[in-house]
Length: 454
Image (cartoon, rainbow, N blue to C red):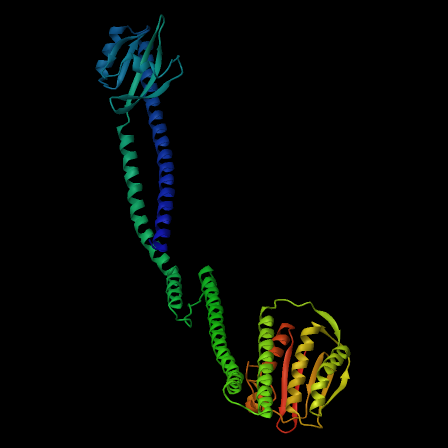
């Protein structure tokens, strides 16, 4: 069952219950009023009958006996009047008995009584009074048929039912149409959800109005945007992983092929001592390269799993001195000078990770430099810069530098022992610190990479 049908059914039930309660209350009030009017009429009639008999007794100068009372009532011809002395019926044209009349209650002179009785299933009113006589009392009753009251109440009930149907059916139809129009956005929202679930991630709901349905549509669109962004990120991540594995496999292939080839040569070919030394040297250098590649891969995976850092205040002078000391032997072999131009201030972060990042930047700077050139460190205003005087990087290549295994000059990088993972590691470390990395480079003049700490 659809929501609008449920709401309409519930609303109809509530309306019907409310109308039934209201109509019942009105019907009860009307019944009470009509019965009160009928009782007042019955009391007036019995009072008139009592007064007439008392006037007749006054005219005669004595109390009326049984025969005279019977004659009076026969002459009156009132089929709804009853006269009885004690428990003896003097005149009664109804089917009511003395026991029925006693149920009205005891009566005394001057106080009339009225009560409801039934003749079969027919309701009647019996009003009673006492005709005072010298030696005993005569009870007078006047029966009033309640059929007109019952008929009016029945007509009233039928009228209220007719009004309820005449007003309720159009009201329910209008309510259904309003519910259908009001809840139409929910149906459209459901359709959009099905479309998104089927893969149409660019579908959105029409968010209109400031009511709860409009707010729900707006929240749904925000959720759909977040889902689409997440899916796009996952898709991009999957593509990156695929490319990463392809590049990683390619990077492994070259040293493994060289090691396998030289090992096969050593096994099958009789070489001179010099050729054996050369082959073993190639095997050693390529195995070293594989070792470095494996360590950097492990470093990248460790950084991916790092959720929080132990951040401390680090003096830039201490950090740059440690980096220079680590990288100085490799730089000295190429005849490159490491220079600390400025080491003022502090940065907040993990010392070991920042040391690793700056060492990677320094190694790249050394690889890009020629003998006699200088790699300069500079720390100021919460920024640390590593600058070289090397060959520089083309502007269209800069945006790809932090991708794993990306190298501008692959042949020169591999000959220098590179694998294209250094800047990827630096980017991960910088991201973990909530910092930013900018790269400025010009061909033939060198490259400056700056880490901006907040």
